[in-house]
Image (cartoon, rainbow, N blue to C red; front, side):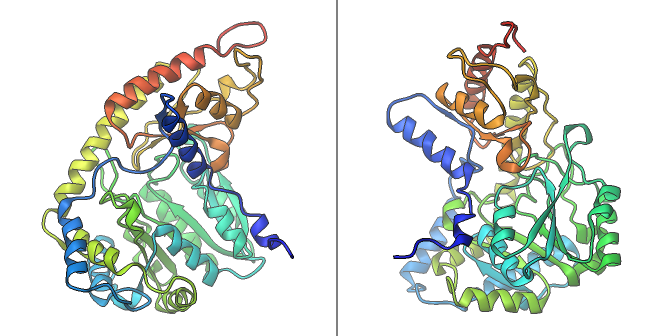
Length: 407
């Protein structure tokens, strides 16, 4: 019997999901573990949303829907985000999928031809590169770091644009860095996209999570004329604590959306009809904005606690994340140290393994394209952050350099 395809063999497992599973397994085995790995709000799905799903079941709304999603849900998405972005969307600009990750997968499959290049600012969400690769594309990294607050350098971007450049992926607020792109940066990217005729994939899943009294800014706010070459990715997973409902969507040019719907018709067909009913309530029901605002305020408090505790650890540098719910501390000072058992810490993966043994689950930066960092989610309560960061500090102080000095 023949084995797996070479294409599938090249796909890595999601490091985030793997570490989260290991952390849960350790907990089930009785070990104390502080889990900062998963980007999953710890809030329950609002009752009104759950009731809408139950009502849909009782009313028999359990059949197939249109492949691209219920018309009323697509109308709600087009209306809501048309107002947010200042762009006149209609339901034919929308495809509803089984989560934002699914929407991105479909998009890359219909957008990319073999050999096409996609510019990806790094550090980046770990699923962009494998999804692009599976579609036959080539990832062109656009590095940034803590010293430039993970902003895109337009001059550096221009040097990466070539004849095979098909798109750039934007993720603001960013997973994993928490960076929020400046308006002038987005304007510069838009100018380059117009001049060189490439697409913009704007992953806006964390758009509601912006802190310090600031507002979310999209590339379409800065350049509405880019709408015919921009695809927006959104979902209800983060904003409404609905990760398990698996409901995301794409908004973009109608030909691309039609192609995505065609592809989806041959894979998953429609997203769950029950999840669609819940998503419609999430987006249009009373009290939604207040629920999101309360969640954002709580996350901002948690962020402040986590950053304060991280900055108390010798050798750690961490920019204040302006959005999402991740901290991305720079840990270069600990590379070259050894564990109490004598193992050498050669990078973020070794450090994450050591910390997991100490009961702290987090994600190594190498999974996001930069081995100098770790990612910690603060989608957990303040007590967990306080106690977990205390344990993290203790574990790091046990690492020593060859001369027995602490970093």
